[in-house]
Length: 336
View 1 (cartoon, helix red, strand yellow):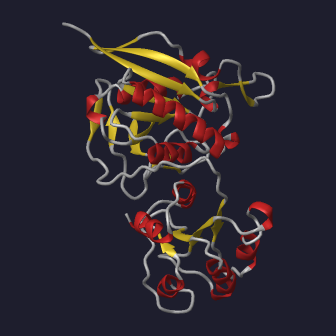
View 2: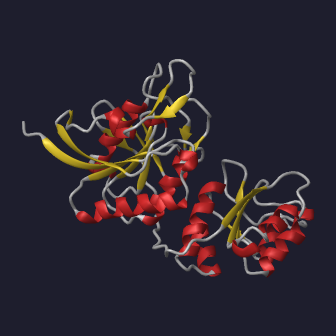
View 3: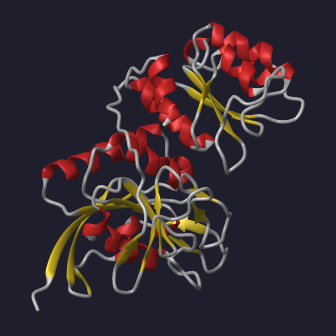
């Protein structure tokens, strides 16, 4: 039998998958060498597939240190690998705290038919029950699979395959933390390969310009007033308003009446405000006609989002604004 060879570009960025627990203090810290030191870069034999790994250490950072700048650097590196035609797939190792945001950033900025898979670990390499190596091998399987071509950017941990758009971290320490609450995983990783059971019906990509944008994120709460919105009006460059704002609203998309004057002041200044729900299931809709209800907010000009959570809506708004999208284009994009 002739083995099938797949060449996978691996980009290491740091995180728990590249860390070790100190035997004395118990603290988990970054180690020199990052993901490559923990996981190895030799050819792997998975069944009848030989996976040739081409390692790249992009940076070695815990994921709370990852910002838009690092996401841009990583997106450029992954895009170059895809465009080179030299690779059958891409794997990115990443810390889990902001993994879903980086994965969605890549999904929105890397036009690709080959699989791009993001993975990480909840336990460092020398902890009992460390999951990093297994997640890494699972990610390589998914990246090497013909079945996942054209599926967009994927997140693979705990033998599950998730769409970057839908997945979120649901637990602070459990190895099964990454879930897609509303839609479930796209498929699973088995001992013999990959089983993909569903695909997204829509994917869009943007070409963001180099100029940065300031986009904020607020979470609604009972009795919320205008103060958070007024703070956003002074949180942008040179003391001006933010370039965009995402609000995790109540229920299907509602806000307390006391918050409306501050919201209106932002809208009057041309700041796009995108509404998502603070619930992790469902979408925002203009249902309620009372003051601060969805119908009222729609009349004010708020943009309703179809299902992504607050952090991801912020990433999407950031990228869309950098690409020059108008209010109407934003409205159309967030409706899909």
